[in-house]
Amino acid sequence: MDLEPDVVTLLESDSVILVGTVAPDGLPEASRGWGLTVRTDAEPPEVRLLMPVASTRARENLEATGRIAITVTDVETLRSAQVKGRVARFEPATDADARAHERSFAALAEAIQRADGTDPALLGNRKPGALTAVVATLEEVYDQTPGPAAGARLAPTEESQ
Amino acid sequence: MTGEAVPTLREMGPCFEGAVPAIIATASADGTPNITHLSKVHLVDDDHVGLSDQFFSKTNRNLCENPYACVLVLDPHNYDEYRLILRYERSERRGKLFDRIERDIEAIAALCGMQGVFKLRGVDIYRVLEIERA
Image (cartoon, rainbow over all chains, first blue to last red; front, side, top):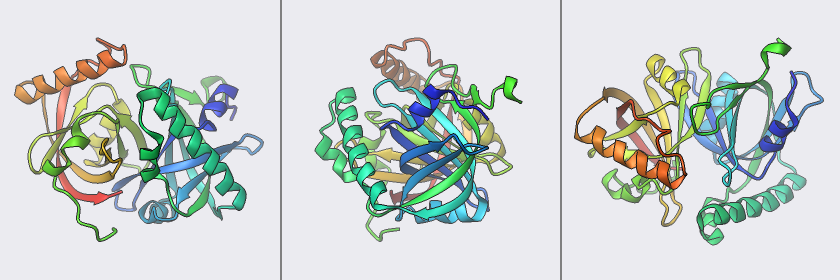
């Protein structure tokens, strides 16, 4: 599966990341994620996402059903993409993850301040505690930018199938 | 669950002002989750919220197959976040609630320079089954 470079750039940007999971009984769960990276050298491509250790229900859902949806939104342009995939493995977060997350969180807070004037100090309330990592194989990517075009598939394209 | 007291829907008023977009997760019948932003969650009464049906079509298709949704709302004053577990009950395509939400949507769209883009088709009413701090 080919991913357009601008889609990879969006997915890996300092953006708001939403995580959707589902329990075995069908109950969906919304939570937040951080620090998404894309491994385009894998086939199919993989995404690696940091999640709060405290997101226990999301983790339980991922372990039980393996299904994950991740939406990434640039808070200044509202450009968004949604990834659908299946969990490949869990990994401990590393010291490098923690450092990257500190930088990314600060960059996101600044972007939100530019977008709507929110004091970055207020966003400190949303800073997650300990993190863990989940790696998922990527199955589909959709345009999720608000508007009538939301839901258009970005990958795999018809040409690539 | 943290054990902290959670507010009632009425006490969560600022979360329903639309200052910060909410988040909705749904799942299809085959267990595929979907997650997206929505501009606003509308407080209906002590036990119900309304979501505007515009064009988040995958969300709507999922809810036809599986009536449960999970919504995150954020208090813009302190950034406390709450998770609501919802079950779809009915849709309204006219009436006072519909008119109020239609005005809200146009106001939000105007702020984004998207007037006329977000055509309200209906208001979906959900029972709130559970509230927890996120």
